[in-house]
Length: 318
Image (cartoon, rainbow, N blue to C red; front, side, top):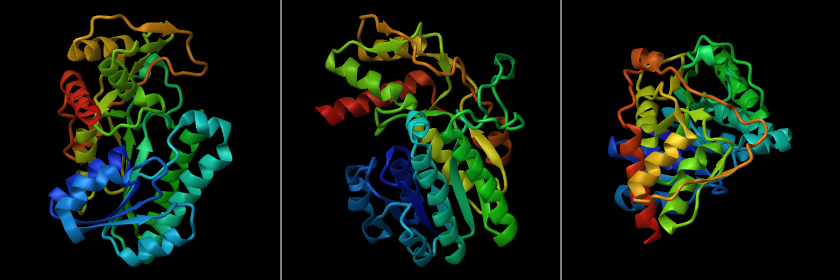
């Protein structure tokens, strides 16, 4: 199979590229390298040779449509995005240009190039808005009422994919991701807390927890997330579904810090700072549907995942 991965030089994208190449596929990466890095693809390039090609291109550029079409991929994995909720609030136009217009330019290229399917990285942490505590873990039947421009763009992305399927027969699966963490994570944005803690713990610096640390998130390991993407790309698997990709488990920031400090051999307590305005108190996704339609379940527990993440950061900084 020939696959195209937008955002393929990033944290999740490059890990997906590794998986697709290991499965024997050809891969074209489209990435503007604004947050991704060619270093993330170095090992893959060395091992895969001409089975991997990188096109340095912004998905907002009209040329991306021809780039995708000319690649003639069977499946397009769309991970390129403006992924910071705070940036979307500060500049919603920029967010829409990347996350809506950019998506459409890629989708049109997929249609013109005869692609069978789009697999879309949506956001389970934002498309459902602020669910009531009794609704957790949230399943896919929960109303989608996003309260940030980023969440709105991800919801709109799902709507566009449905429409393009109806109009052009372009199949899709949308993966509503929880808080993804693991090796190669960029320590920016809400989900970057694991990377931020890893860097500070390994360098002997204090870690800061905003608020009392009881706020919860659903932390899912990047290897498990990539497995969901790979499964969703298979013919006839998950077609037309929006699937939550999470663990179904809430982990507080205090619990996360304790697990990471233990793994790093650090006994110091975290430093607390005032809570950040607008931060969700709790977030957790029910992955039951993904188990049914993708035959996917998360395999990596938090202790194993944070140990692997710390080991990667330690080796990188050695």
